[in-house]
Amino acid sequence: MIENGTKNKKALHIEDLSKNFGGLNILDQLSMSVTPGERRAIIGPNGAGKTTLFNVISGELKACKGSISLFGEEVIDMPNHQRARRGLARSYQKNNLFLNLSVLDNLALVLQRKHNHEGNWFKHRSPKAFPLLYKEAESFLESWNLAKKSHVKVAELSYGEQREIEILLGVAADPKILLLDEPTAGMSVAETQHMLRFLENFPVDMTMLIIEHDMEIVFGLADRITVLYYGKVLAEGTPEEIRADSRVREVYLGSEVSEKYA
Image (cartoon, rainbow, N blue to C red; front, side, top):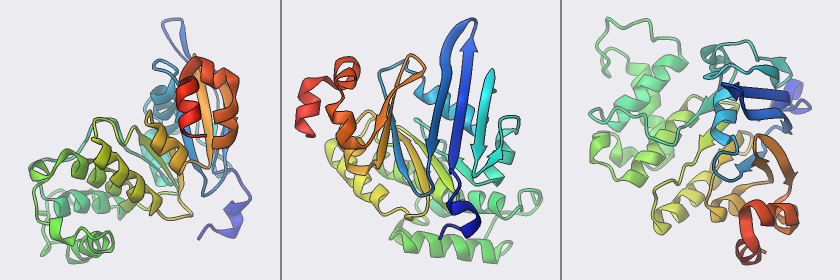
């Protein structure tokens, strides 16, 4: 549940955010707000600034100017690990899993950081050395119907399964806000449909921002949609409002896509 002290605050508030590289404005005085528990899709043509926005929100890139607050706390000058401790997690376009480790061991690494045990580098990471940590990992995988995969090496999983595990590692950190960067990139139609059902089962009080090109995911999952164009917010609204927006149809969706998801 969302705590009483934070439910009336914006989960994420961005104001006049700018980022440039060598004089090229990638984000140009961008402002937006996301409410707690909201599913917000970020869409737009290639080069619109979507991934740069995620990199700046997460602290991997430093903004040139502007403000970013998480549940009312300004974080614009915080490094990414401090933002993570305040409940921000993300996944990437490409998997960042340890392919030669099992699913369970990958999850144990995340939980080790979550419980501030990362300093115990001298201990061999095993159920014997960290019994409570591995018990939590096993319980987590069981709750997501993945217990049968716990001892399988990640390299032996299909691409779709790897993407699923990658996202679940973000969920295991128990974040307040989860950033998902193109979770269905490279997937088949069947894998994409499975991912949609998978994401729909996420905790309802977890705020989610998702960059996605697949409109089935966008219109099937999002409460609201923000459309970026050359680093600015072109349009923002409900899926119905975005489908009906002539500017969005012109620069991104096209009439055929708008009609398909009408």
